Length: 409
Picture 1 (spheres, rainbow, N blue to C red):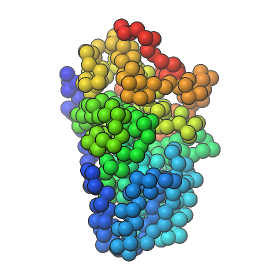
Picture 2 (cartoon, one colour):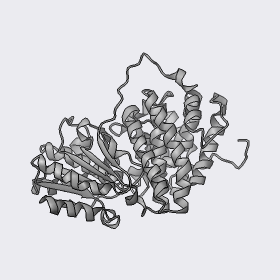
Picture 3 (cartoon, rainbow, N blue to C red):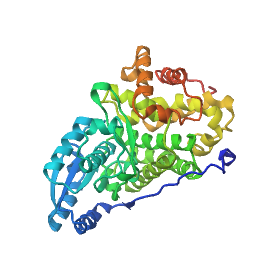
Picture 4 (cartoon, rainbow, N blue to C red):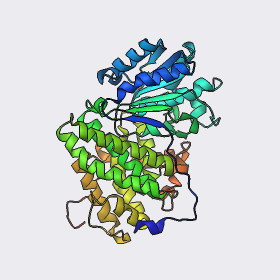
């Protein structure tokens, strides 16, 4: 049993912080949220979002109506791209300062929410810019109130204290963790996610899976993160195929969004390690790479690395998707292959070579993994001994399929 691997004498923080309005129709709660912002004396807000989804999903119709009803002024920064940059954050902040924004509303998936959280910090700390924030030149303790309207089911950003932004000139993609950017309120409305494409649906769900795999196996894992991990993988295994068959299936979208929320709480508690730390260099070098796809390409090799010491936990959390394992070290390769097949079944068959990465890229990727601010500390949370050689092996084993087509691998 995995429980014997929990050190009951290790005191852990267990975090469950903010209010989430969850369910079909939850977007209507934006009226209540804007009213509460007005009661705080806030007269103007900065809206941070991407180019189109905030309108295409219908979310903006509700937000605009609530702002008009309560006399809330606003400016919209709608230039956030996947893998947002420090420059985008600074542009949003400049708009917010011009508008004298007293709060920030992020609308979108992880990228707009992370950019919005970053803007909320910098609008409260006007002497700094985004590069200062993401190179850790100061430790934020204050931010403007932040509201998250989530449009995907993968990020978990609507329930935690994390944000990620890329610094283009260095190819650094650091992560920050600040208590001051827990959202004041969040909205998780499954109806807003029904327009996600097949690939987006797959990749955001795999992001949620990786959140919980890493949280459940990190050096600071606690029973809550392990329990949430199993529930998350159970839900993705059951409901992702249903959404792939019918993108408008609201019950399936509901439980995928719930799984992603659980994932956000899980890694808020026990953090992340190899897969996210190694993916950030991939999408820093190629911003067009979907974060979730990068994670999917790395996950089997990461599991092969950690299975010898985390096998009991992995067998427990993956039981519904990958049954029949005991958690013994000699099963590591076979388990990794089975997960690779499962990812292919879920809609992510690609490996790094398919996306243009070569053996010759590995040294640079390893260097970025260890030199990007914050990533080395994540690598250090992996349950196995971390080194440049171990990281290089994970990248190398992710270039091509581990599955050679033999059922007894």
